[in-house]
Length: 98
Image (cartoon, rainbow, N blue to C red; front, side, top):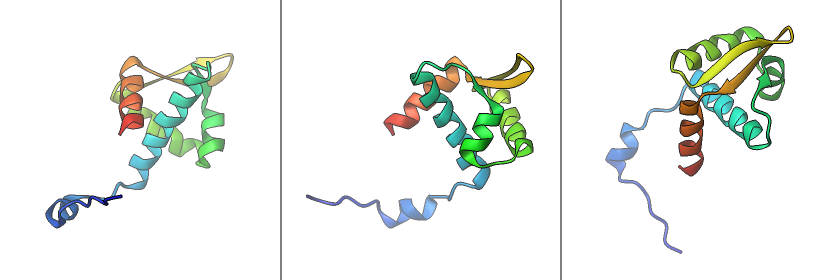
């Protein structure tokens, strides 16, 4: 099996993802997986527990994702829940395919 590697000039242009970016991608992936299981909304508390992050960190990240129209955050039965928007679902699918 042949191994294909990127040219050195391409690799030197790569920038490592920061923690916030990785967490935002993880949130999109988690919401996508839950949606695929038939759960269109996930409580923020569940997301915090699964990703092992503080609520304040999650709320900051959700604000950024909401501003990009990738997630919706709303109150349901006295708890905050999140769901993917159509754009968020499209991004999640594209990330899964990459």
